[in-house]
Image 1 (cartoon, one colour):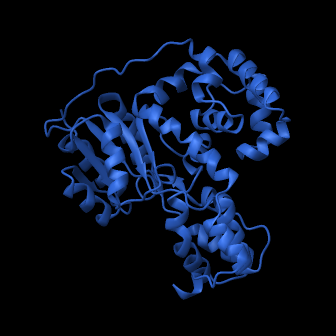
Image 2: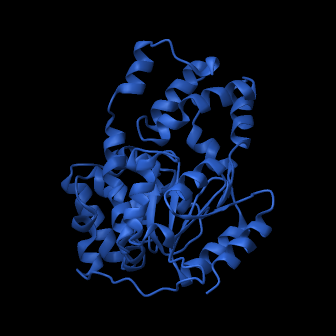
Amino acid sequence: MTSGSSNGTDAERSAENGVSRERSISDEASHVGNRASQGLARDDQRSISDEASLAKALKAARKNAGLTQQELCEKADLSYSTLAKIERGAIKAPSIFTIAHIAAVVGLSLDELVGDSLGGVTPKKTSKKISKAGTRFVYFDINGCLVRFFHRAFASLAEQSGAKADAVEAIFWHYNDTVCRGEMSIDEFNGILNKKLGCERLDWREHYLDAVEPIEEMTDLVKWAAEHYHIGLLSNIMPGLIAAMTERDMLPRADYDAIIDSSSVKAIKPEQHIFDVALEKSGVEPHEILFVDDSRTNIMAAERDGWKVMWFDDYRPDESAERIRKALEY
């Protein structure tokens, strides 16, 4: 789209091609996805319940890294109140994504940071069902499946900036794939967005989080599916948004065995690499996966790999959820 194109100013070349500190932190934090694929992120979330031990470990790690609370908040993209509560032990079972991000900032692995809290125990996967159709693992998309899409964000950005909504949307779609691949941070995208719209404080992250809302029918379905099957998330999404939505209770609180974040694996659907990663992390055969997505292009790509697929219609979420439940009968 011409309204979203760049003529290559120094600032934009730096934003599009530079390797930022924030991106490195996001990459390091993405190791949680690998742990999740082994059934660890799920059990870590349950195990990080000794608030006092975790608080002590986080505080010590921060001080050893020579960081104040404010400095850590800025580097880890956390609110000061959230970090302060974690260090006081006032938040029960904080998000594993938040802890992973803190670990990356202070230069530790997740195990190094919370090893004591986990007690050195390696959790084991529990046995799950096999559907009548042979499904063992279910992957859910996020935008358009678990949360209603974010188009309202374009209108709110237009209102704040004074620009037309279609101009905002054109800029977004021009850079969206780049950001979702993790090739550009949200902060870098915000810089471009502000420059093109003549503003200073536009923040796509906040407008997105204010615009999306959970699809209740799918919240119930995902929780049910997690009781009977191994499940995961497979999403084209910007860095840090899964963690942010988790902290705001926008995503179903379920036992995810794998979380495939496009910004972490550096590929987006329908590209082959992201499906290869998702298959590896599932630990099952292609024909044993059911993939739920609202994009026909994405489900066709998965089907070519031998996956079972179902298209989700967010205009009829109750009907879609019921179809999925029937497909998972055992």
